[in-house]
Length: 373
Length: 141
Image: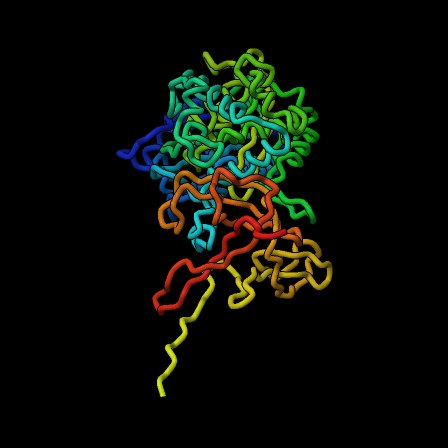
């Protein structure tokens, strides 16, 4: 067992539409916020990891360079919507292994309006030409299957978005800060049955920053550390005769994290899951072990995942309302859980939260992380 | 003697592997070692890691594993909404991402029997017919 890893500081540039701002400016605001939050000077940071997807060559140096040029190694990390959580895992691996005492992650993205393509990459492929590569359609295929197998209702999925928007209204950094009714969600424009417009995460401009430290180093800065306790990343596994649409082995990763962290799903007080589209939360409460398979719809519908519910999920509005600047999202998830475990989440605070779990998925891999205080 | 008009050549859409002509089919891979099937074709078997899989014409029949009705389209696609995006499970067990044709989108149901259609999607710069594939409700049992 290596050094324990502490989340020493977190910062965000508010998520939303910021066409007038550069990627550097978005990153700078988040980075300075995290440094101030940690009480750390940039000259003491030993390594930088930058999560982004489409910001181009050298974005790591371009963004870190906004707050200083100290000669440290900076690594760009691309894992689609899970880029900055993977960046944090790489930083944590290095700290845990004794390579660094203090590292910083920046996640940043500026995005175009409109629908995202899900598959094919730069080579396109027939999926793009034939209209199959529609990102919401990938979740819709999973949702239809879930409805077919378990009798899950569209209302169950839509309720995720209602809850998400209610939480977003309590978050000054969220892209959407307005509550929606179930009717608003169900009656918004259908995109890919059963997913409506208000069940899709938006495209977003924003940045996140996270400062990670060894436990020993963190003692110089804080008496009540929040630990990034355990983390596991993975990719889909081929199993003969089985097929699913998952971006990764969610259940296996969660089990690995629970085991290493010495906890079970029943010990988790607050959660972040990847709700790029509303069915995501329904699938994930099952896959992360919070309810039996097939019961995710009713579990969410009955209010268990509300801030005052049994298992608060996406207290900051999640991808659906906080927004989803893809490279920055993982860092924003870490930010919210860190605030929750410190008791600094204001009107969104989950009382007495001590243990948190996070799931961040991207095309090409999934990350699951447990936090403790 | 009059020359017969040159027959337009058919070429598969980039990213697809199709058997064109009289008995159109998807060309997939079969592992000679463990018998696993794949589409699109691949070189290494994901089940047993055997290298060099055989090219085989896959069954033209399958059933609807899941679907959605796309009500909005990405720019640059050939489809006009609404249309059905489908995951089809072929008789061999292979799943293929495709779209449905010759169907009222509202009539799509998981489990319904489907059959392959190979049709012209466009004409390329050299005047060839670019062929693609879709699935439609199976005509007979």
